Image (cartoon, rainbow, N blue to C red; front, side, top):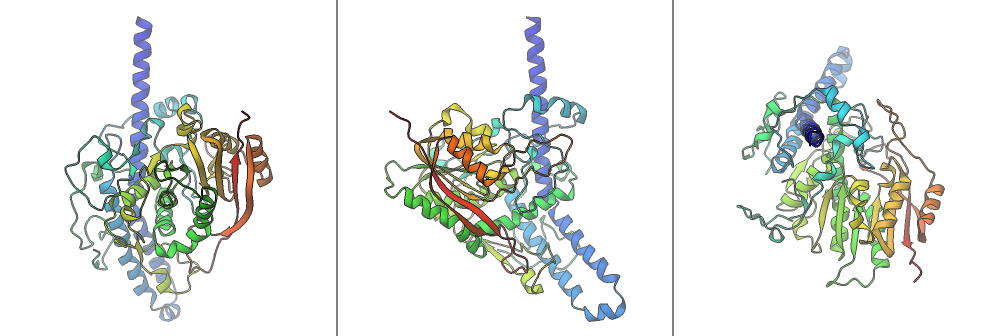
Length: 479
């Protein structure tokens, strides 16, 4: 009896530690969003300091730059307004006000890889942004397995909302007007200098709960802003045509007779901001997007659930880099989002987004043979062990099910040097295909597609991928 009591106390202690770590991780992500205006303002001040160091003759030649800096400063609160409105609608899955003042040493020693489920990440804080523009996958960026919940339209749930929102798509994560701004100091931030009437922020956005975060975290916010253009702006249509259109056409070819009474099911791991999953749902599939990063999930939930109209918000996604600009106007150009209204896009009933690590969530025995199709777009190279990804994809597909993939092999953990030796299995494309054949796949087609990723279409530099594109079918078992 005494031993059982000690074990129960130890389990409770570890649970409290894990929750504290989860709350701190989520606070860090929210703080990264909230620190965006300050970091962006500091970047403008850095430009101004460089200008002030110029000789008088050079200043005279570039006399337009102070005006440009003020225009950059004017754009920052526009982006900040969108970010803060997004955060106000986020429903954290945890009590964000709880005390997290726990010994760091105790956290690090107790919440370690020794007790993580297969596929969980527990990385150090020193990771750098991904060179391809994608948000790096950190253990602290996403929810634990216990927080993996799917959300369906409100009328399908038991809970009753006290508010009605005709524009709500009801899709996302169950994590239960734009006026000018004066060209003043950094205080012109998301918290009220936009001219918009803003509702009161939730208690968990209290400044006392914010954390000081490194600039690398704010860089992820800038990555998210570029991803918004890729998925939810007219300007991103060319890139979506390069990446998403071949996938959508292949799905239509492989599933020509889709039943409205019993639609085929499709899973999209690494769904990002959700546009590809939504487009697949609109084709007549019961589609579920899966995403690990809280950075992505907070934003996708806001756009999918809370957009009232198309082009409701205006952002300035390209102001953070002065490099490779054809003109100042190109750098300062506004982008309206979203380009469509998700709630009226024509999705198939059952469309959902699921938060959590792909390996953890879809290793569940209930997922075996559950899906008619799996679509991976710029996802395979996010794995610590790509063989494990392919094994799981094979297991969750029905016999005769289809796997469509498009993307490079820029392995995210290939050059990760932290406190621990991070596992990273880096296979050639030839080896990846051999592994797929081993797990029962047969090729329907294979080709190469040239595409960019979150690239400024007016930039002088265009990073081009020669992405692998294939569709494979899982062999039928012999009867």
